[in-house]
Length: 124
Length: 361
Image (cartoon, rainbow over all chains, first blue to last red; front, side, top):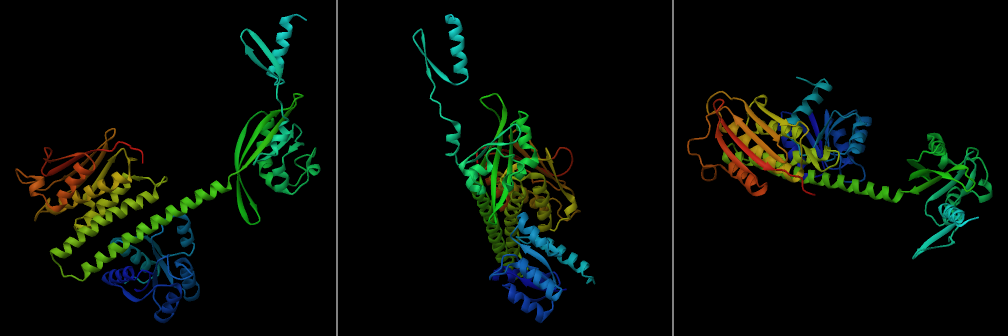
């Protein structure tokens, strides 16, 4: 599966990309803002985006997820430090493929990516 | 009229509030009470106050009510409250709060009112009232609690933000460790990093559960331990189904300052059991149990392995893991730990008892 990593902390982005590759998927790029995410998604057409909610710039990850879904039909798995109900509800309204709370554990990431692949009909 | 009748009459006037009485030695001195019309006081209250008669007509409306609704005193006086179009009061009339107060039942309610695009919050009291002539009525007192609500909401927002920052920082440390581990070949160094990641994971789990608990202060032990042992089994590459946890009572919960050390203890003991309990042989069951004995938490971790060697000294012979456990149990939690050979089968049992009496946070 082709995965775009959207995360504004460079070190965490590096780690997520590493883990995704270790789990046997391809990373098409990393993005720190909603705008870059949109741009990279257009260029690299990933199957799914791993989306942080807290992003640099004016638009957050929930906005970015809506844009990706509307403009490019790309759905997200949220990877976020937010666990409060309001933010979760806002995020779930964008029909994400998954919702992981930080810190990331390989088992949870693996499960979420596998579930996303199934939902997108990309099982091999 | 004799003096008894006079005394009774004066008493009635005292009870009705018209006279006040002071005893001076054996004499009772009566004088006119200092009465101020309550209507004069109502205007000084910061609350919105409305007095209605039994037919629901406005007897009094204080200045605050008038300025809030923008109505004049003569526009409301004597009018039926139902016929006045005051949106602020609509929820009160709908909820039957006023009707109940007329029936003699005091009531409280909270209402939200939108004014100029902002939400205002009121605590409303309806108080059964009796007028001078004995007629029943009702006094409605509305306290604006918007400011207090805002402070509370701000506090909750800050709390959520702090949780978010803790998580982000834990993620950052975890990412650094994970990147470091990935850059190294297999070996003892990588093993150390994995163990450190596991210990960090315990803190993250405790924060997860704290966040999910309704009061943000306690960690539900059952779900917390279930996730922890799955993490530990995963880290030790041990079949997760063989590691089980049993918590009695099932709804047992701990404050954060006990939950973190208890989590670290369980993590180390389970790792230890998974690593040493079956050298070469088939992996056997590892059982964790936690029981609350009235302020004392008893933790036991049992395996079906080879047990500790005879004469095993925890302090001298133990790994870093066991040294951590001992320090957490005795130094931090003020408890005791024992290592036993199981009498009900093969394997070892580590028994930890720690006081978890509630202290004020």
